[in-house]
Image 1 (cartoon, helix red, strand yellow):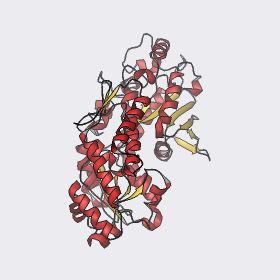
Image 2: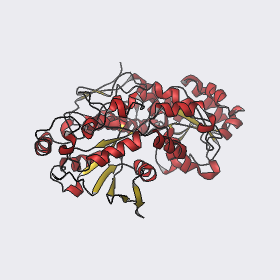
Image 3: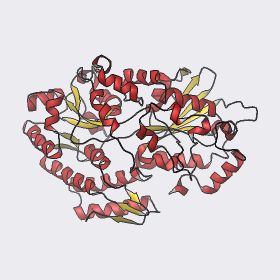
Image 4: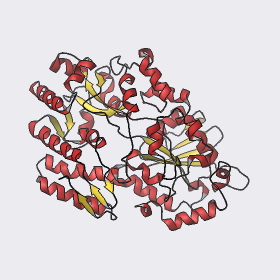
Length: 463
């Protein structure tokens, strides 16, 4: 797997060329980049990602931004640096494939073409923070002291980005505890109340969740939109084992519970039978006139997904509660690419956007994002005037997000999580809609995952 990131031969060449004679202290970071011996930084900063979420945060909240091009492909900073954005879709591993190719060429690329910053999701973060792959720089080599500079961040976000040597190689402006997000209007019609505490009693565990789904159906509504994708993260995040151990894909029993529930919800008409997430039909189900009751989302799902789909007509008709199980979904991490010729600028960006409390709270105020400041989020949870949301009908969601964030553990993530999750959902999606049998879905998953990752040899199913 590691050879697929950046070949070891190329990494060795990069290391020999750019890091010869350098230790891992902060003073070596100045010489560890490919900038000139004069110490001047490059005038082009290349940032790679899979969507415009970080680009938007950067353009809106990084204080050194001067202007943004009309097509949003370039951002100009006050010192004249031009930030160039490269965006490739995350689905089917496209972003990773193109990023890997670019990182393989990092040693020979011209200064203006070298990747300086790239983003990674939790699903494949460890692939790029791997110490042996050496695709990203330890933050200490940029002059960042995690214990001091990032002391107010949630520990799980640091644990997830720490390599086997104990070096932190990525940082994030957000934490992603998940909740159940529901429509107030449907709640009142189906259950007689939209109060979050009372709705929590209707979704407090999976058995109760199913009974409430039946009640919703009887009233002409759907509990969920998709045939399984909307609950996948909750079940998957509560798995007892990692997806991959050695060369073996291990299907956790909790994922088979997801299969069972998703099939039943589809057959019984408890969901709207949308094929998956991020599709037109799925987006429409978040519209103001939709019959779909609820969604499992972290904070970014509310501001980045539901709000645009709901529009002004849907504002105020939403609320949150804990749901059947706590879970984490996602997290966008910022990494410094080995070979960057802008280490000082990269350091400043990381600190301003992920460790400056005032900036993080500005992001929260404007976007509803649950930002990576423990003290800040505790303040919002305790103060309804700070935390209340007009979009959520005046509710303070941070009361629910804050305790959920403290319980997140990231000890089961592997470099294969995105691929395993996609292949598993695709294979069983055909089973949910009746295209294939249960056994055929299992076989199709085995074929797909072993083709996607040639270093994996077998799949083990629960007994």
